[in-house]
Image (cartoon, rainbow, N blue to C red; front, side):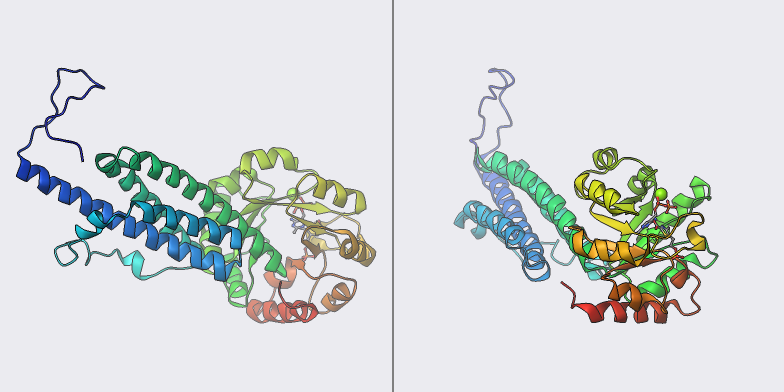
Length: 368
Ligand SMILES: Cc1ncc(COP(=O)(O)OP(=O)(O)O)c(N)n1
Ligand SMILES: Cc1nc(C(=O)O)sc1CCOP(=O)(O)O
Ligand SMILES: [Mg+2]
């Protein structure tokens, strides 16, 4: 630590900074050491929690490796003298916990809470570390930026993985029982939802989208917005679904960043190739059958489903007129994923219908 009564050259050579008696200096030093010790522990614990998910939940050696690297970097700074300053029985903070710490609604919430904890602790290390060693502040700052990147990459990876695992996609239609229908489908195992309402006022859209997002994240499902990039950003959705007449993918990508999902509707091979080349994360393939939900759009048919099965390099969802009666024809044509509106929005028992549709889709191949 710096000596008492040193000259602060960065301001003026004539200013003497805080002169404290030696005993007081020692006391302050011990306090700084305890702060550093506690926050080094906090950072490592938080990273370990995140690392376990990267390793066992996502099977990502790369993300787990980054967590491990950061933990090992911290060990270098966790010196004997800092550990020796620990005084757990005398720490009034050990009993303090926030009610939210006792409860996590999803893996996403758990990860976010731990990223927050790690980032905060690194900020503390950055500031107090400057009093300990000239290089500690800078080292912790660099680690904090690496943690921000890790968070962005992990959340994006998580989204893509859940997208690939999703076999059934519910696209909503306006309904008085919108929230209860969606919740029933989520209870049945739905992991991907799109909020679609072509006519509502923006105030209504904003309110419903906020509630649906909350509901989806409570159940660990992805939440997408139809058409509107601004709404997707406003409610922090997982992404947006764009049709051929909607915003170009490149513009949406610029607004949404690399980690959010962008889906594109396609009706033929050309649209499919273009959507993939433009960077769509998934595509809609349809309408498989003519449907009153999308009046005036001619059916692309099962031939296009077979074409998608052979040619799509991104996850794709057959859509349009699919229900419990014909889903096996669509599966036989090569579909592994389907999107539906009426089958679930108009179902008397959306949980059961969700379970049935998923049971048919899961017969094809086990989840990857
Ligand atoms: C999964 C999925 N596929 C296709 C569509 C249709 O999008 P679009 O062509 O933009 O038509 P609208 O839904 O906006 O009427 C979709 N929404 N979702
Ligand atoms: C919204 C939408 N897009 C389609 C496309 O082919 O791009 S078909 C469709 C409606 C699907 O509704 P249902 O499941 O009620 O038939
Ligand atoms: Mg659209």
